[in-house]
Length: 273
Image (cartoon, rainbow, N blue to C red):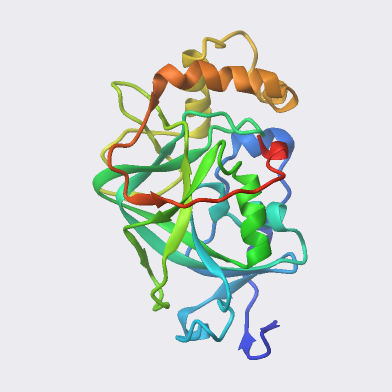
């Protein structure tokens, strides 16, 4: 495939594994989904390799032109989530990056599709392997909506991000959970087992373990199976809101976080709460 008239892209051989449809129940159970290593481009519902040699050093030229770099800390790392958010005709370049002195941990919130989502949290000496999605103006607005900007997440300018490619020096943005992070024992958060990190200080939990902890803290650890709980939460916004309210005493707020709040006002977020 040729992009921008002068960049030839090669399709990822196992693209189907990253783009396969996910059931509504598995949207929660399999969070944060599979993501390729390195760079990639999602284009017209297909997945292509992206190498440093294919990028221009001039931000005014090439496939990153006019796009905002947004650090992906959870499901936004994954092609299947970007496809869901932006649709079959979207083109989204994604480059590898590392976040320093933070871990990616479970947030003190229940997402609208009943996953326990995640957020960055200060952790000196920890380095997390992530990626950066380069979004055009329309995609950035849609991303704000899907993150429940101003209610579930804040838009922030991140510190401590290093690109794995030689890229233009630009601010890198991201999203931080407003509710804080889930106390997973001893007054500390837990990292996502699915997200690799070096120098990790916290314990890790997978999605099932995090959801179990959330149900215990919210006092809804009843005889429902996890699948039944997920289906109920997906169908009942007041019930989700009640869970989030019950989690407030167990939420930990970061002290001196390495990011700066950005003022954003967006309509149309109700569908993502």
